[in-house]
Amino acid sequence: MSGREVRRYDEQDVVDAARSGDRGAFSELVRAHQDEVYTLALRLVRDREVAADVSQEAFVRAWRAIPRFRADARFSTWMHRITVNTAFSHQARLRRHRTAPLDGLHIDPEAAGIGPERAGESASVRPKIEAALGELSQSLSSVVVLKDVYDWSHADIAEHLGISVTAAKVRLHRGRKALREILWAEAGDQ
Image (tube, rainbow, N blue to C red):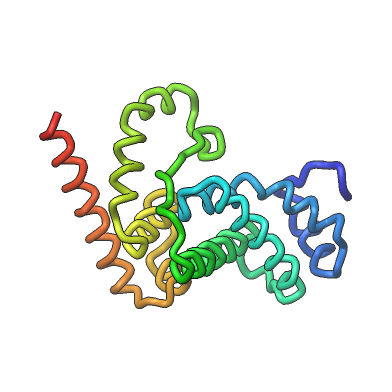
């Protein structure tokens, strides 16, 4: 199986092979999903090196857990959930060890599926949004990124953050409101 690209119609076969312990099949899944896992990690931790570590750790966790993967969700959805949990665990370890502040959020237009025209239009706005997201607490920025960038449902966000659906909605509302206030204040300063 290795050496060929995973296609949507045969990914379940590759997942089944990986669940049976086929390392080559799992490597194929890693190749197919590494960019989206890294991009999600980067959006959550806001540091390229940390995102690379989180991505690697997420795939290690996935390899260990794949025999228990029930396939009632798509593999990419399952990997997103593992990545979010890994990023939060990693951030908690960093907070305990009091590391330096994280850099701003970087959005890779190609990995995010944004065309060149759209990327050019948003290039001037992106740094402002990244800076504003950086001013939010992690609990607010995480919900905003998961909902507005990855279009997760409130229920999925709540489940993976260990909060209620109502709390997820409240955090999203507060995060969006805070972003608006930060961006409006910045626009007024110009």
